[in-house]
Image 1 (cartoon, rainbow, N blue to C red):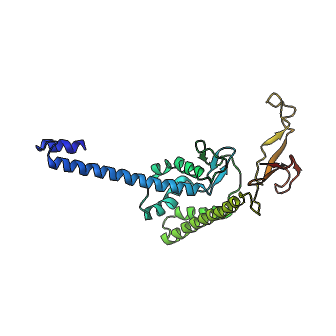
Image 2: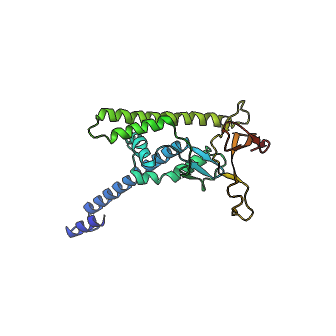
Image 3: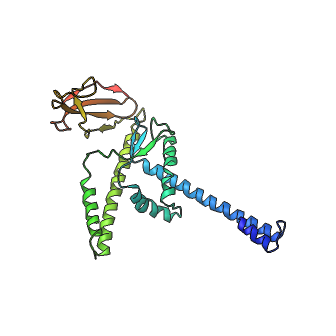
Length: 266
């Protein structure tokens, strides 16, 4: 803008000239239009994030949404970009990532994160030390696509077919989660005639007994440790209950061994 005004002055046009005034107003209008377009794209992306995060795991005790699936770069390139381009609302990667916090707040304010504080909710990946098995279908499809992409001279049609198969499976997984969450939230109505139980059978055997009062094991009992996991089968919604189960490491997680506590209201 300053360069334009300087060029007008150097050409002999003063600030009060009609030509200078017209060009200045035109420049201001274009600048405002660019701001409006940027705001519109950002609003679209915030809505997209709100919808995407709604199918991931809400951890009310941690005030955290656990994000599962492919990485953010893959998601931006193959899931967000195609639909955003069709709507002419696409943002580049960094502005797209910066909309996550606003998407989380929108999701919390809309009431889809029960017990959430919009100012404290965060988004994160599962722990890197997790040893939970991966979906067999996901692994096979991703491995096939990766091997083909590393093969010199591979047929582009074959590579595209493998990639489309991987994306289709990811979409199917996302759709299943949406249906499961819709069934879960439908039971939150106090007058609902159905219940929804979250069956947690994938706890890790991090708990150990005995534990020294000093916080450090002595050599006498360092090898005499009892490894176990605490699993929870939770019936969600108003009047729901929590059932805690202790499972030793030498038993299958589908077998309940001992109940720690009687059902208590949530």
